[in-house]
Image (cartoon, rainbow, N blue to C red; front, side, top):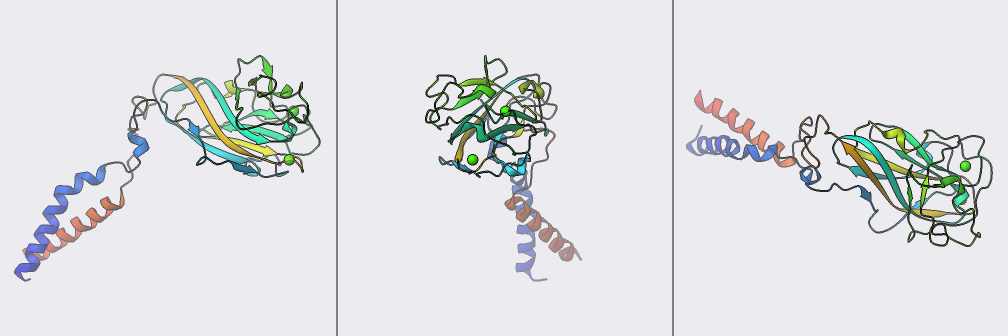
Length: 259
Ligand SMILES: [Ca+2]
Ligand SMILES: [Ca+2]
């Protein structure tokens, strides 16, 4: 082995050992966030189309926004805010899914007592929704989600025109009872808020979703809100893998060099 190759081996080995600790840093900057955790998803300032007449009772037939929540602890209370553009509220079913996979139905085609949660039947309330008047689902509300828009004309918008912007959930035949379904679950993780459309002719889009959680205690894997989950092994970054390769190459060189 030439002098040059031996020097290269030594540089590879010791250089990679010196910088190796850097590769152990987690690559996801969100895991390093501190302070109030994000709980709102807004899709790049644009709205996502809710496919007209696609709902069949499955989450796969709905338009869903993923809402990351990193608040530590178990859930005491959850409220969900959504903003939607849509004509004919009675077309819409809204569900929320927790990180643990619990599904709760917040809205089940307002004004229509659907015989099953499968997207069949007609018609429900004819009033509309507009993204500039977002509304909230809260178990403590005095107004029923089933009555959303019931005092409005078909050309008017719920919340904007009746000043009723907070509703308690009514699942009808959909899964869940209300937002108490999530009490006791860990809050942190990816939530999903989903909207489905059950009748042709009136379409719209889903503009934003917020999951507000009130918790107590801390997760066993997360010491405090916003901290790095101590039960998760940080994924090795591309640079970490490159360093590992250099260390192995240097070590191999060194073994050959010593012979
Ligand atoms: Ca209903
Ligand atoms: Ca429709």
